[in-house]
Image (cartoon, rainbow, N blue to C red; front, side, top):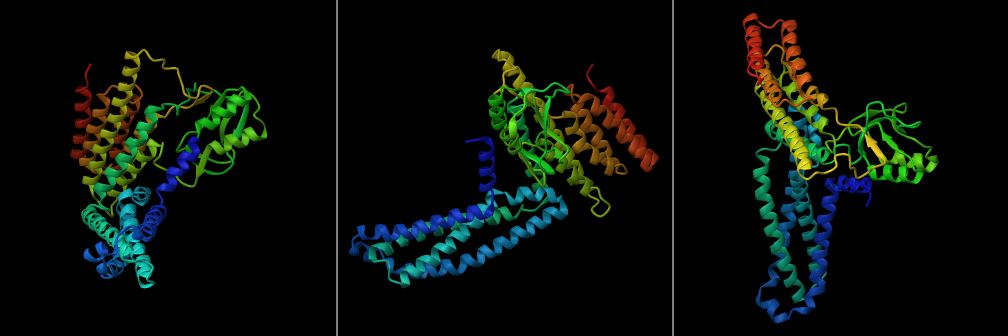
Length: 429
């Protein structure tokens, strides 16, 4: 299966209606099995086990599950609105695709559909004594599942929509995207030299954000044309019809150009998949919202700072571990899965500005946030990561200049300068 089809299938499975449909099909299967397995059970056993009580159980299930499903759906929508208003609308995407919410709603809808269809079958006298016994067993099993899901759902509601939980979800999605990029630094292709390009260029067919790149399709196109393919965009980039998305050393032909355009999936918005910078950008938006005059919550901004530092430390540590592992195994760093496609590297300095710039800009008048920002930048500076160091130093200086320009109270400003100076003096070497 191609990378594009696999990616589209994964996105489809995250849809709420898909899970509800799958659970509903399972309910239909249970009702059908009760009819098929019923003749295999002796009637006297069915009578002794009291399968006649199935009707009352199904009535209880049908009346309660519809109410619970509607309540869960309204709670879900309220949580989406709460996240959009208290954190950022971009984070709502994580709630919409949350597996726990979808499984809960799908369970309630599936149980409701099962009970309604089973009641119709009972009233139509479709089932004999054995069939009612099988139906009774399935009903008890579904009741057990519903109770477990309901208890988990009640516990889940205690954190759903809270800012802290939203920050945790964004961090989790960002680290997942980072792990994908670290596993395939150039999306599985070769490292692209700055300014490298082929003679034959291909423009974006539409306007939007790059959501996914199917490197296997680009590799096939390059092999068929016996050419070298240069990818000029990566997930998260904004493109329009004049943007060059790829180029090749040889002409690809009409079919080849169409295949390349299809390999670069473009949508109306950025996604967290394969795009670590989007997660960091969302963290910055949450902090900016917390520091707005209407909210005035510097504590949340400081939590975002700590989360950002933890996320960036993960990036550096995993990158170094990967390099160390390759050196120990004597692996070829130039080996690539797609050896006829080169791709640009992730802009590491941009990762820092995505998350720390909004904090410095909106927190210029908050001395507690400013001091925490200096500590955070210094923590990352002590990692001595070559790609980070110049940007970290610049961010530290810019934060102080922003505070000066914003008119921060002089004693607070002096406190900020002292924090920055102390952190610089504490650097090793």
